[in-house]
Image 1: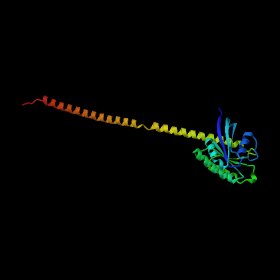
Image 2 (image 1 turned 90 degrees about the vertical axis):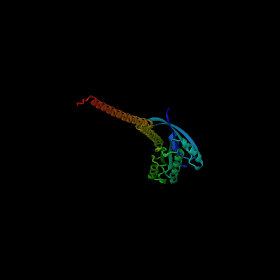
Image 3 (image 1 turned 45 degrees about the horizontal axis):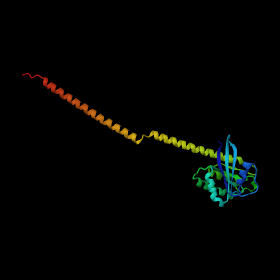
Image 4 (image 1 turned 180 degrees about the vertical axis):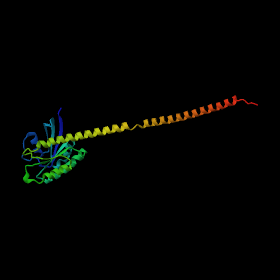
Length: 240
């Protein structure tokens, strides 16, 4: 069975979330803007020589779909946070989306990748490459600028998120393994309370037995000395 990744595309309205997704799935650019409520797509592809399935959810950016947004955030494994380079406000919105993802997932280490879309609109740019990169670094995640229209970095964005998911899963597995190993070492190096008590009792009994043995030996020597004295007295001659 092929490994499957649940990817959620998140961002404000009109930033090109659907255009990116459809370009990946159908190699087609959707020019007109038609607000999405929720669309789901599946794609078989190869990432790092492994055949995988991407289960992609293209979501609504409008505020009125807040409750629905939280539902898909619960099921997502990784998130593309998309803004448009010709809209400073769309970059600011991503902070709100990211905080909502953290809250819903109850985690500070959710796999995300920041995407600055519409890089073909250079003359309308409001967000510099450096600003987008700085925002991604503040989230400790990868960053790409894309163009759905010109199919620039489209596959790289989705596949990069898959790699990020794999890296975080591997890190979590390694951390769990290290913690288990540390617990095992602590358990084997520390004797149980019952074992400590048995050892203490054995030491006490050994000391008591030693005392009794020493006392018996001293008593025996005293008896032998007294018997010798009596012999000397009874065997001597009195000459008158």
